[in-house]
Length: 334
Image (tube, one colour):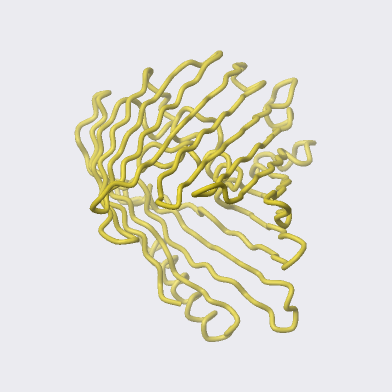
């Protein structure tokens, strides 16, 4: 608990000090709490736990003498495991520690010792719309992780609606002494533009992990594609495809997902998604939830999910579940 208190104090002091010393920065303390009451039909009782609890500080330094350059930064701590731990031990992890060198005309360079995966956000975000089920490795069907480490990336300026993102990754200290450099690399191209009464997004990506990391004779590769259309009224529909080749397990498979959300009267919205795998791994999942928005930052939800096959224990969800919860997002004033 002392460790957690020290981190909280550090973040608060960071916000106060940067506010006092740098009038060209706008640090903000932010966070989220997603508390749920859930039943899994694989044998667990109804129980209340934290799905996600995190907090951090972020801002942007705008340099007076270098008007074409700004420096966004973000430090975020994930304390979900510490909240759920019943024996009092602290399990705190860094969710994001990132710095961007952002120019007006030439794109941005990202130095990301630890951060939320932009690859996952862009290409899997179109179907990552639920509170319990996540469209990533924790969700159990897609193999893409929700965070990365040791990332150096470049984001191009937008040209005719297109952006280009190459990146190299160092996958942790355990891989520092191998002969692979980088441990992994990826690239994605995305397109954003207005289309009719809404906005259209599409993206494709390719990721390769070196054979020195996988311990196999070939590189592990992952091809991904995602697209989403959002109406001005807030309705949306999206899809994601993931193709896995030369997985360390020796298996190869494809995973597909489609998900949509419809805005309803009286501050309600309804989300429905369907995900399935074929190849050496076969499974499917059907997810649905209903949310009621108390304001822009707080909403209640009910969610149901069903998997054809029980998932490995490495996933956050193992089988069919029913959940009710409330999510609160918070931000300090600028």
